[in-house]
Structures are given as structure tokens and as C-alpha cells.
Amino acid sequence: MKYLVKIFVVTFLLLIYTHAFAEQKIVTLDMKYVLNNSKAGKGAQDFLKKSLADNTKKFLDIENSLKKEENDLLEKKNILSKEEYQKKADKLRKKVIDYQSQRRTSLDKIGNQRAQAKATLLKSIDPLLNSYIEENDISLIIDKKYTIGGKTSLDITNLIIEKLNKELQSLNLQ
Image (cartoon, rainbow, N blue to C red; front, side, top):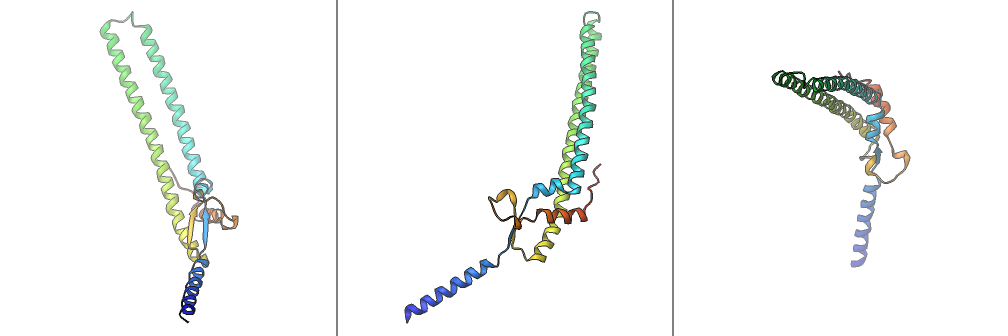
């Protein structure tokens, strides 16, 4: 009789334990894909790529101008007096330092815009995920990059992109 009670208790606990985990719903989400392929994400990427290309072209023109100025100065080195050559060389150095500072500032600005765009997208996605969790009784959402495999029916990436596109059309970067 003593063993029968132990077997009953163990069986009962196992049934409760397996039933508790049978109710868990786990889905995957490809966060990188959501950030890159939503309307707002694509718009932000296009804007940032265009800004980077424009800045690269602008700074390449300035760099070529500075190189030309340097070559002209080197050609005139023997013609100019030492003091005048030194003044022009110092002026050129100041221009180069200013160019480097502007370029660094421009790249930092683009980097900050990228970080702000990502943060804004993530803030917009969070309430969508929370409402999806509540509506569908989801226990856990895992980023797809941390999974090895699973059913494709458990991937909610496209659903979240559709909801995000309805809620957030663009990020208005400037």
C-alpha cells in the first residue's frame, strides 16, 4: 500500500508537470529582418545611405582640392621665400585639420542618426510584440538568430512587419 501511494503521487506530479509545459507557446521573430524590411526601416536605410554618399562625394571634392593646393605649394617652394612658404603651409595645415574635423563630425552625425532610427524602431516594435503576446497567449518570443531550427509556422516575422508598417510609416530623419 505504501508503494501504491508513492507511485500515485509521482504519477500525479508528472502529469501536472507535463501539462504545465504542454501549454507553453514559443514563437520566433527575425528582428534584423524586421528592422531592415519594414517601411520605416527601409526608408531610414535609404536616407542614411544617401546622406553617406552625399557626404563622401563632398569630402572627396574637398580632399582633391586640398591635394591640388598642396601640389601647387610644393611646385612654388623654390620660388617663394621661406617665411611666405611657411605661412602658406600653415594655412594649408589648418584647412586639412578643419577638413578632418568636418568629416569626423559628419560621420558621427550619420552614426547617431542610425542609432536613433534603430532605437525608434525598437520602441515601436515593443508594444506590437506585447499586444501580440496578449492576443495569442504566447509564452516566449525568441530572436530567430538564436534558434537552430523549428517549424516555419512558429515564425511571426511577417505578421509583425505588417503591423509595424500600419503603425509606423516612416521615421522622419533629418
